[in-house]
Image (cartoon, rainbow, N blue to C red; front, side, top):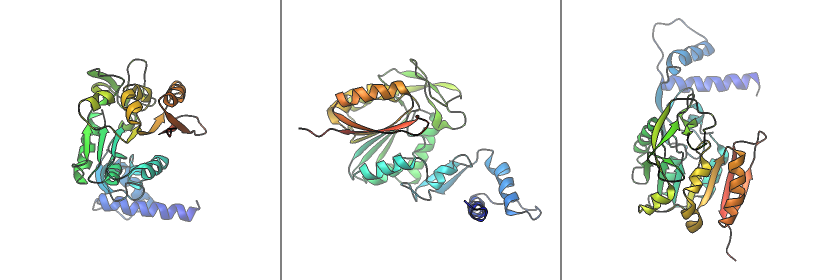
Length: 283
């Protein structure tokens, strides 16, 4: 990007920031760059949360209360474009989707819009602060009729309370820390959260999904183990972010035995990588 293009981009974001964070009065004239730096330090660094509409991508136009500048990427709508493309291509009106590791609804909200009023999204999020923000976003976008927030960690079995390591730089990095499983980037406080297996969730009378999206920062194999019944019986499409070689090797063997074709998208650094599993056509 040229210097002029970079400056134009900076000015555009400066205007956006000014729209949600009013300037303090009584200051001397400053350059645009100096004002941006000052507002970032004085207004954004204290972890302010402001309501904005997502600018592009699958969630374009939806309202989210974001922590700036850390969550600017959610405002722009450029978070995990590959997953956005997959969801947009797979989802159909009337579908049921499970969003396991929903964070603040980055994917649950646009998924709810895609499945329409006849569809349903179950958003599993164990971190209490993220779950509270997710409920806010559901209400602000008037999606209460089709999104149910499940404040629990999906796990291999019903275990009551289970240790969970919160993300430090971002709550989205948190994950279950138990039975040899550790979230890759989490370094925050260790808390106890409710756990649920997806098979038990369905056995309680909830509808099985046509699409299962998993992003749990290292516990993805445990989630699938707890969903063996619905995976083998109901054959949902699966989109999963995989963080460990052991989990990738297990899925490479286990999912085909359950009747799936699998495809990997593997970055240069190897992990995290994305798995897409589709039911194999019947003979």
